[in-house]
Length: 122
Ligand SMILES: [Cu+2]
Image (tube, rainbow, N blue to C red; front, side, top):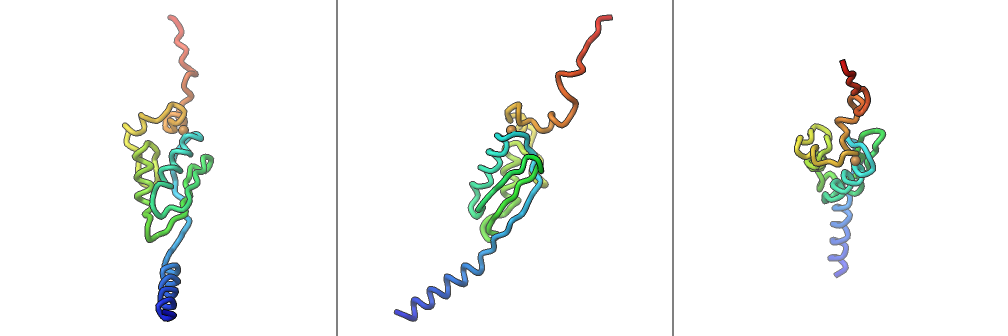
């Protein structure tokens, strides 16, 4: 019995040593607190992702994950699928169009809308 316990303990230690948790940051586009929430929720839904923190200012997502369970590209792909450009994945236009107005990061970086549309009568 003692021997079995010893073997079990050794196995557990071996498994724990094999777990590799890393922290990596990826470029992800977004614009407001709602974007942050949605991006983090999607990332945390993946098995093996221990934490996900979106930085609006830095336009980046930092993931802490177990490399044996989570593949960051899968996470980024899922984020792109809900409308946010993530890493090498560009959000499909349909997904981007479904974002709330306050989240439209592609338009916001362009020309200021609502300004400069003065049509003078001739
Ligand atoms: Cu938003």
